[in-house]
Image (cartoon, rainbow, N blue to C red; front, side):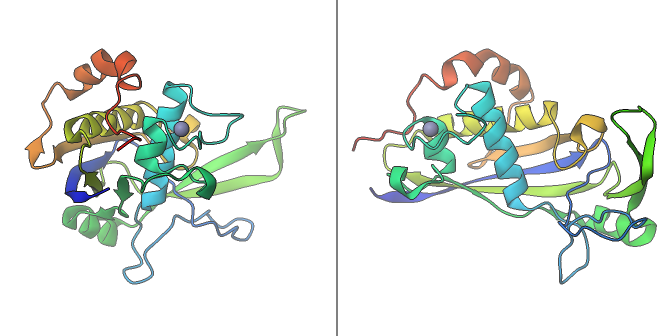
Amino acid sequence: MKLKGFAPLTALLRLKSGLHIGSGEKGHFGEPLSVIKSLTSQLPYIPGSSIKGKMRHLLETAYARTSNGEPCGCGKCQICLLFGSGKSQTTYQPSRLIFRDCFLTERSRSLIEKADLEKKAGVRIDRESGKAAEKALYSLERVPEGCEFRLDISVRVFEKDDVSAIGQWLAMGLFNIEQDALGGSGTRGSGYVEFDEIEFDGKKFDKNWREECKKIKDDLLNEVHIRTER
Ligand SMILES: [Zn+2]
């Protein structure tokens, strides 16, 4: 297998609602659950793993490639070849997609430095009584709507890989994320995002790219773009 080179995908990731990607810290009662921040800048960012995990999960669900809620892991389908099988026994080839961490644009950075992050109050409901549970008030730190991050994905291109088809897979992934959500509390309003100014392998995405995704959806998994036999 010979690596031909790399094809970059870049885009603006714009928040249409507040975004909460938790830092994993539990926090004390009454304190907002904090978002993950860069240690050097103290500003929020979106870990590459969050975008990768969400995109993979949505594509696997769209093409029924999950097994008992676990990632596919077969190592041979197009999704495993793109994202990696996740298991050493079924890793036949290097995965193609590299998701960088996404950082705020300059404009959004200065916005947050001035206006700070949003603290969204929530109430935990007791399932049995349907009333607010004891110690039920909590709040969620969110990156406010309108903020923009730079999305940056690098694709490893091997000989015989169909680069434009890999672009279609990425488009399908982004299209699915737009309709779903990123981060926590996604079913309750957080993490609604859109992508703009998308460029792949030096070419701008067509302005009708979302319509294209709807058209090619059924065929994408059946066509072989990355071959397992060489
Ligand atoms: Zn698979």
